Length: 256
Ligand code: ADP
Image (cartoon, rainbow, N blue to C red):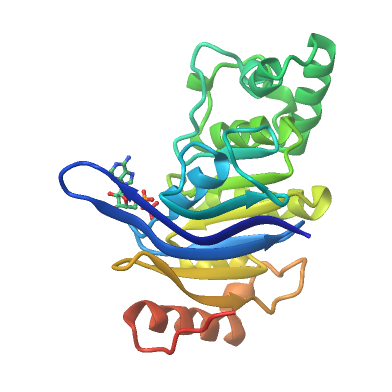
């Protein structure tokens, strides 16, 4: 079963200078898969996620979730942003329960769900703190817990670790891999970082700009759980070189 499908999607933004943010993008994300879109800034990654989140509409083409056209936001499709997007006046718990409140879930169940997801991201001791008092890594854990709290069918992750230092980023990448292995939530993750794409994904979709399209689809051959030193292996380095060559335009593009 395919959780997410984009079929020949075009998205243009209006104004005097029309921007073709997506110029004929098709992709399929199977249920339970971890798919990463990698591409340079401006190639349309965020736009693609926003379409799946139901935050914007395609100019042409189809965007489907679970076989149905996406018609707006839903708790089935939870977004995690780079900038955390936490409410500063709400505690960690209150941030995590926000989506549940919106969905009309009762207080007791909200607290229980918050406790479960905060334990999943290692923040069980911080439930009553405010975002201001947290490090960047902790804030992003709250963002992840908030997304998971609504028990979504899919996580849409927009460069969620982009603003973190290298060590925190590596820790959160490992945690996300563990959460995905445990919960089997479908993940569509976007990044401009090839290492991150290969570390996390079962499949990497390579996007380029001008035009903003997917030009290659790479199946990542590494077993899970992946070793900590996988980045130093020849297979990893070779794959990374291949993707770099695609960006430079020196490699043949591959499609499904
Ligand atoms: P990425 O996430 O890969 O950096 P985006 O999806 O943010 O790419 O942007 C793709 C293109 O669309 C860029 O040229 C960007 O400037 C443009 N764009 C994105 N959002 C808007 C918007 N709301 N209005 C006008 N142009 C936009």
